[in-house]
Length: 363
Image (cartoon, rainbow, N blue to C red; front, side, top):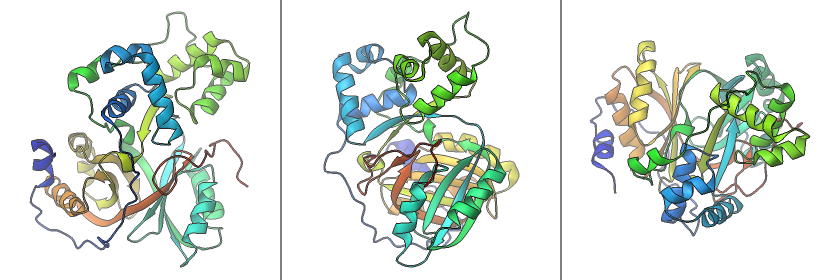
């Protein structure tokens, strides 16, 4: 049931509603099993602190640590939830991709194998595919888009929206299965110990990047053993990188099992002075997942999860009413996602098809 706050946000009148150019006859594949209440509570807790020990979460969630570990293993095996280590350096961009008829599927399959393509959505509107590309520099993004993506047979055109600022991250979105009091009890990451080095050795950083990109909960002991390092050095490096903002731990859940099955992107123009205002606004809108300031014919791109197709228009009206200078120039509904943070996503929206490591070489 939609809360009063949600209702008020979604029902703000729109003074100038632009024509919605997409089909409402979209069928969303839904897994047979939705999340149960314990799974929802577990995922919400891990969205707050993705590396929280089961022993510390157990008293707050209300089941024993063994049960939590077993439930999490099940969620991961079914591809319904996963934890990722995010390293927020380098450059990023959203890339619109249009394809020749009948070749979109093959183009998507090849795009998903490119390590720099971190996420890939199949969309309606003025693009067939929408990719999130991460690379070391803007020039590296240009090279990836021009030579790797643009060079694929079946690609007709690309358009790059270089991200200049992250207004809101998807990692801030919560499942809202815990009460505020319960959420406050979730343990936060421990700060670096007093005697820990002030800098992280390159070997330790490389090990953390390699391991946590695929599994943000990988134990320190396993990382150390795999890379021939001491557990203390790995633990110190992990704590230091998190404290310094060099590493974020992010927990994601398959959209199709959350009760928010409609995924949409809005491409907007707004007064530059209102871009910063959007930070506060996005935090108050439960549907909002991501907001990016970009350098292109748009200057703001917003991604949302919605409960119903009719909410696509309601959200558009609410956004334009809340920020009078905002004009939604284009929008796309996501039919399906085929890659998310390196994980290959099946037609039911679950991460069951493997992982393309960001540091791997493309074939």
